[in-house]
Image (tube, rainbow, N blue to C red):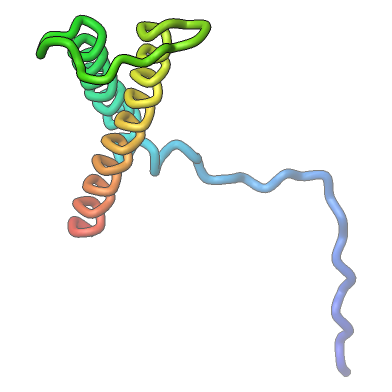
Length: 105
């Protein structure tokens, strides 16, 4: 006799899923993000101080900066510089962590 396949039954059970934070922990993403944020903030502060306080003397070519003035515009630029640098450093450190982890496997 040939047995017929049994129809699949539908259940409300949710299958167990593996933990999702393992890769983040293995690659040290929180540490890398903290280092990136620190480096980005430090670079932005130094660039802001050099530009606004004119530590190297006045810059040639004076311009008008509407609404916020030069300090406000350079503060916004410093924020962009800090964000971009933090992202770049955190990404680079995470890639290095991924490379080291792949070598140890």
